[in-house]
Image 1 (cartoon, rainbow, N blue to C red):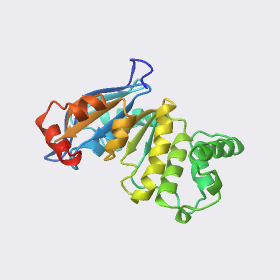
Image 2: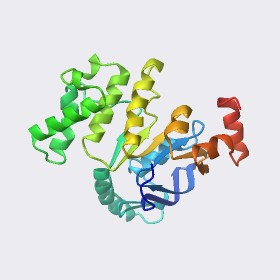
Image 3: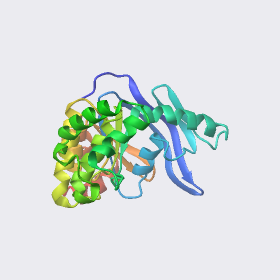
Length: 259
């Protein structure tokens, strides 16, 4: 739940174009410490691009993003911003973790090695300390019994839980989830969502791009509905799901929620 009204992330007038294709158009949003914000909407609405811009996996065309006093700016406004953005992104990624649709685990490393690699290599954590912390995190996501297994020996749900533990090992203040259950067989979706619910209850700031409407309704402090590159609804789950203001959102929910 929300702990304060100090924005952890502020986005102003952000746009993202791929040539003539306008994917994001004038995004304005603040994310607060301790919030769980679900980003929903039809395919092609810009949800994943929005998330990737926050972690500078995509360059923003215009506008700006401020995360922990680090600012990313649109490169079309001034090409010099690219060098500044690269520097800011390195700092942002120390505090902002990301969990992807595909698990991106190193296949040649064990579960334990996958979780310890970044703290040791990036944060220069002592190997034994990193191992002890990794085992705590693997236990937290129910994967401590598979510490010596390799990713190919795990189900998709198990691999995603390891990916979450790997992200947590870097001690992020914010975690971005890009459709973390979309690559999973239906039987494994619940186990990943349960881990995410536990993180939410523990106060982790989370932005979740998802098609899981039940999760968005139950766990989120806020739901943002995107369409055509705009955030056209932003409110509590009850406000957005039960009383959407826009005709586009009403149409979308009528099809997927049978309301």
